[in-house]
Length: 197
Image 1 (cartoon, one colour):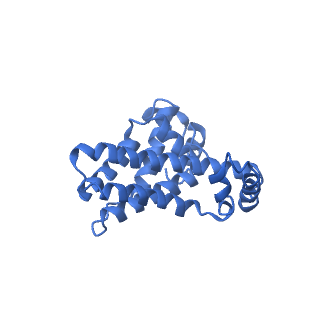
Image 2 (cartoon, rainbow, N blue to C red; image 1 turned 60 degrees about the horizontal axis):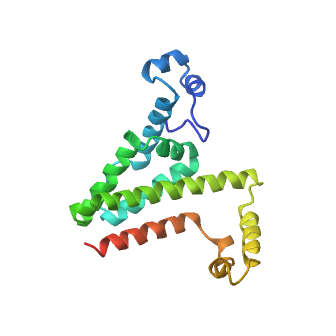
Image 3 (cartoon, rainbow, N blue to C red; image 1 turned 90 degrees about the vertical axis):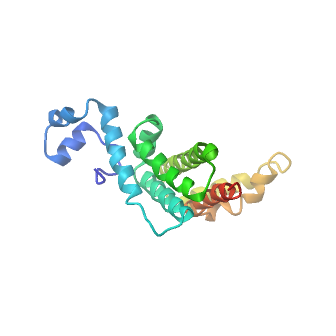
């Protein structure tokens, strides 16, 4: 399933790729939502990979988060499927992998669910937003640097009293690295969790 591509899978595209009829696929999945959940589960399973035994919990969480970020960036429909089916197996897989690492960090049992929920929300939310930004960028012509520079110029012109922070970051905005910023957010969460252990 990992090779379905950037476009959201459909019964038609999947039957063509598998050289079978849609009826054969309906035998295994009842509807489009089930198809997307199954495809998403395959993508998430691939992104999570095999557990690494010699890495620290922090390193493992960073690697898992970045792998999911890259998967959603390459296949935006995965993020939509995750948010549309929050109680299904793809999310359960992510919860389990993150939860094992949060436990290994020594987070108290009473705080583990909140810690994993915060990580999951951040990972999926930021990844979905990043993928949406990339799609919007392609729709605007694909020149990321030019699009961000134009936004930065507009931000620099905002009222200094009403938007002092946004004006102060405008110069940094065109050169920022989405993946690095994403990992910086993961590190902030992990530092917060470590301080409570």
